[in-house]
Length: 159
Image 1 (cartoon, rainbow, N blue to C red):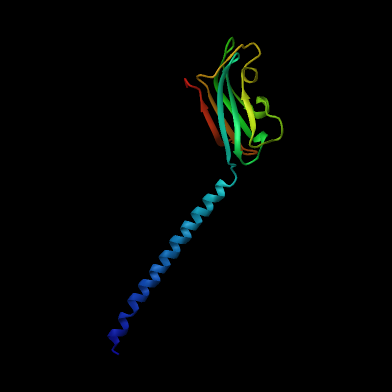
Image 2 (cartoon, rainbow, N blue to C red):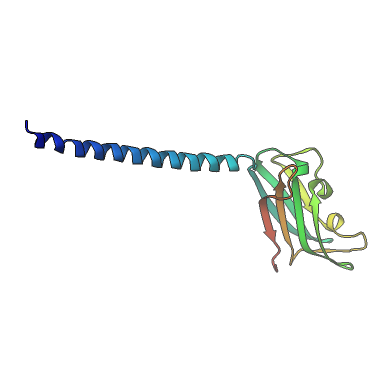
């Protein structure tokens, strides 16, 4: 063999080594990204929520139904009612714990209902509740934190 034949064999070997190194680097970068991303999502619960709107003698009502998902502490679930019309009183915007909306117990699981009614969100002088321009947001707030995750949002027919 001549010297010229042996020097050509080095180039393909170096190319293969570089391709393997680049592949390993890309795989490590992707794994770091996805593992870090997964860790940030693991603290938030998964909860299925739906609303059932009804009209009765007290005006409008909204039943917020927890239909499935993780069991969560009821103290961590907040319901924000914005622009609820309370006949005889005016507009009300407030944030409620689920206990104020008829939920008893320390946990929320499938089958739990919270009620947005005239008796729960309006002052006692109000005669009817108008939810037509209202937005109701159900949120899970992490213990010790000011912000959290929106689980459900409902808008009245005129909102």
